[in-house]
Image (tube, rainbow, N blue to C red):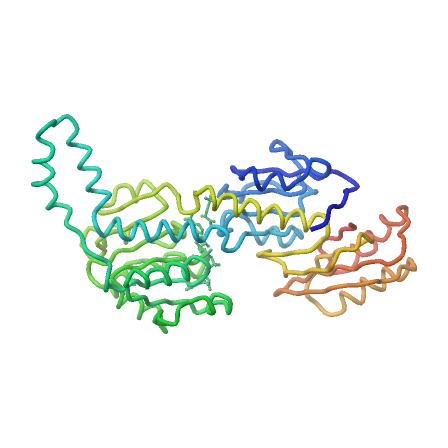
Length: 399
Ligand SMILES: NC(=O)c1ccc[n+]([C@@H]2O[C@H](COP(=O)([O-])OP(=O)(O)OC[C@H]3O[C@@H](n4cnc5c(N)ncnc54)[C@H](O)[C@@H]3O)[C@@H](O)[C@H]2O)c1
Ligand SMILES: O=C(O)[C@H](O)COP(=O)(O)O
């Protein structure tokens, strides 16, 4: 990480509570945290819904201190050359601990039991008699030997799967897009389901750890419930939209689903039978909030100061050692001859290229070019204008 002094101070705006340990990475010499700013250089966010926000011209980066980016208009950002970062894995342990806690606690009817125990307040020396007669309502099930289905074996799903094995569960996993890194970390004892139907049909408990996308929306519905075992427990710590709520209400009513544990209460959810709602607590630990904030802040700072990109969800990762020389960066369409056109625009100004990197991701690409001679400040606007004119260029920056 560089310790450069920036030509102009940058403004960071936060839309949610971001841990101080992360915010202090933005040193006061170079950065101002201004939550009222209309035109920040970067925004740090957690679950705030950004879909209806107007973006100012200065905005270069959005850092999601967390995993899910469905609250951010990612396509709109890509079209404008705004990098959207997230913090892969930084809150995974927090979610895993809550998933396993609620898996056991719900199997033992602990939530219902503790609510009932509180109703005994005021019954004095009769309490123990009530406890011994009333406890039969809360007889639970052990998870040992039961099958847990894990949909999505990314940062969270893999941790849940591995630890459930250590709790003597059988684990079946489904993830057609599993990354090589995660596959390496996953126990070989996790049974690989070839279809999601196989997982649905064989699980006593199902936990889902996938992003909300057009493909995953409503994946829990009347049709998929019909494949599942009777009395299955479903845990949703991913996103509300994965579950068709009226189908879930019917499945809980009929007993097809025995219990529904969810981090996403809604009016309909709160009216369901046998539901255990949590107020989106999955990532809400001190450790997780700090991990996410620190990772997000480092990524944004590095991008603003050097142009390097790590953990963007809409542009490729790209890294070039920063020497302090002038650097041009360009977001552009991933079409032929972009690099040729950019370098030839630079050659018109007699600028020699010291180093460069070009990376692509789908329809978009990113190029960074280091200049090895001094650049006369007066010609910079003209260079930027020349590069910006190239068809397919989205955003140009000089660092
Ligand atoms: N409740 C919370 O507070 C909380 C906290 C963190 C994350 N989340 C949610 O959990 C999700 C997962 O987080 P993560 O950190 O594990 O993300 P991740 O990107 O590490 O893992 C997601 C996994 O889902 C897989 N996947 C994608 N589509 C799939 C499909 N159709 N079927 C099966 N697998 C599929 C991917 O291949 C990937 O391995 C996030 O997108 C977010 O919505 C919630
Ligand atoms: O996607 C995530 O990382 C979680 O849903 C956490 O959301 P939060 O940062 O608002 O707690």
